[in-house]
Every structure is written in C-alpha cells, then in structure tokens.
Figure 1: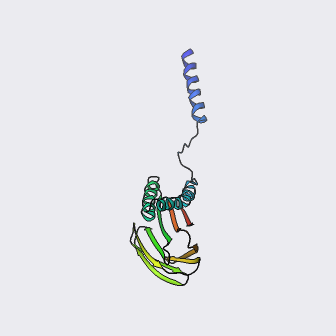
Figure 2: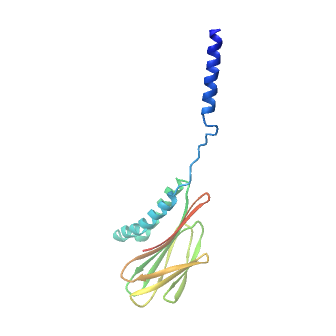
Figure 3: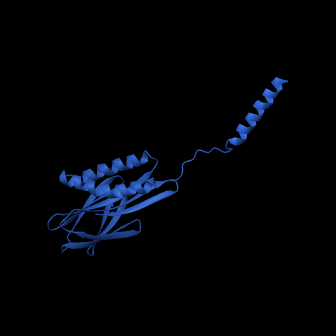
Length: 180
C-alpha cells in the first residue's frame, strides 16, 4: 500500500510541474534599433574618414576603403548597405567633384553647381570625377540620382562631402543623407 502512495505522489508532482511550465517557449529576437545607430555612426564617421584621407593626401582612396570596410562589416551582421558619396574639393579656379558609387550597379549622377549641370557616370564599386568652375565663396549643389533630387550649399574654402546611404535587413530600412 505504501508503494501505491509513492506512485500517486510522484504522478501528482509530475502533473504540477507540467502545468507549471509555460506551454509555448519561443526563442525570437525582437526588432532593435541597431540599424539607426549604425547609420548615425556612419554619418559621423564618413566625414572623419574624408579628413583622414585629406591629411594623408588620398581622400578618395581613404573614403573608398572605409566604405568597402563598412559594407563588409554591415554584411557580417545581415545588413545590406548601399551608398554613394560625392567629394567637392577646391582647386583654386575649379571645383573637383569625385564620386564613389557603392549602390550595386553603375549610376549616372546629374550634378548641378550654381546653374551648371554635368552628368557623372560611376561604375558599381568604383569612382570617377569631373570639374566645375563656379564663382563666389559659396555655391549651391543639387544631385539627381535615380530620380531623387537633393543637395545643399557648399563653401569653397573646405573639402565637403555629400552622401546618401541605405541600410536594409528584412523589412527594416534606414536611409540617411550626409552633408558635411
């Protein structure tokens, strides 16, 4: 008779433990705001990479290396990063515009500086350049690529950068425009 009570007691404990456990244990990762933090970090670091390149006499090469590194680093976290940048450098009488295209396919950038428009063709993962001859201390820039128009005002006394980047993972998408 004692053995029957032990069996019933053990069965009772098992039933209590079974109903005390959660039925549905799911291991899911909630969406985080890491992509917006990454885009904010890239927006701060692209101008720094440009400055490092200026100090090392290779601004476009340094910026290209930094962009390729950023794309690889984002890809290791499952993020597809695409971007382009345009660097505006004063050469005395002209403005040199160097463009880098990391959008996955060749692009034509329509660049308007103070009323003068030129098309700059840049292959995927590469750079190209053109020159303008604006007058005045400040000049207005507008950039058209894939039908999107944006831009700002640049100063002749400093090297400036304009960039647009996009981070995508699943249904999450973050876009950032950088003007420095």
